Image (tube, rainbow, N blue to C red; front, side, top):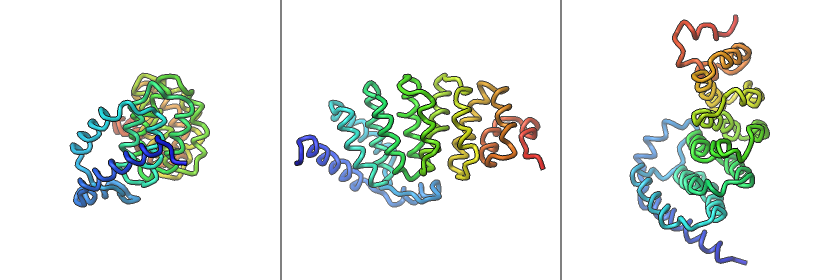
Length: 243
């Protein structure tokens, strides 16, 4: 049986896609494609056009519940298109006061369908880090994520921690959790780990360097490359692999 809520979601889904189709630009798709080795799947919407329409929808649809936005997001995520994923994330970011463990678990389901690093990182920045900063979940809640078959879910762990550290969290509490993906072979996961450790080093250099020295001979090279890129040339030498 189709409910009133289902009809509303279907109506908004059509409105979003009609707008994106109307402003699609193949030249923008071509421009962005070089940043995504898996390929860029999207309409190619000018950023300013996207942001203006996003803000308009924010005002018009602010009365929607978080469940409405989750249901709408479920449909948008299925398309895999960059702008549809982006607007789904933006809508959820509006409802921080309604975040719960159930919403947190729902975000993991979304990540399992993600197709690129940019969508993943935006979700971490706008949504996932808030679950830590607002103490809705503990860092240990991400342990299960490190075992995911999706590299984007695994990447989301250190990138979320990176965002939490930028907001004032102590990076040391996350080291035991990221250990299980320090041998991850996916470069996108390694880059996320390196980015987190680079931020950690700015705040807790001694303990971060101890961690890096423990892993430097076994972890992926991208982790060390990203983690040490803010160090001076001589200091980076101590993290070279032993021959």
